[in-house]
Image 1: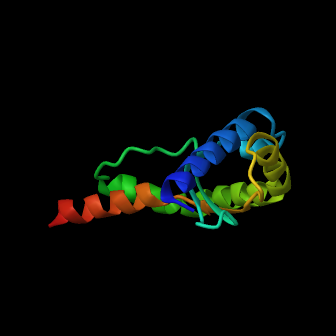
Image 2: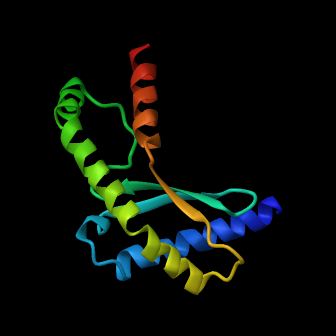
Length: 133
C-alpha cells in the first residue's frame, strides 16, 4: 500500500469518526472528545487514533509558577477524565467500526486503538525548560 493511499484512508477515517462522535454517539463522555490525528498501518489492519479533551487549552505558552502548581493539583482529576474518555471510546469501538464500514468501502475495517495526545503538554514542558535556561 502506498503512503498516499494510507494518508487518504486515514483522512477519511478521521472525518467519519469525528462526525460520528459529534452526531451519532449517545454517550455523554464522548461529547468532549476532539480527534487530533489518525494513523493507519500499511496493511490497513490497525488504526491509531489520537484524541484530546475539548475543555483543555491547546495553546503552548510558558506557565508561571502558580499555574504550574495549579496544574499539578488537578492532575489526578485530569487523568480521571482522560481515563473516562478512553473507556468510553473503547466501549463504543464496535459502533464506530460499523460507522466506518458504512462510509468507507475497503475490504477490512481496521482495529481501532485510542491514545491520548499529550503533545501540547510535552511542548509546554519544553518551552518551560527553554525559558529557564
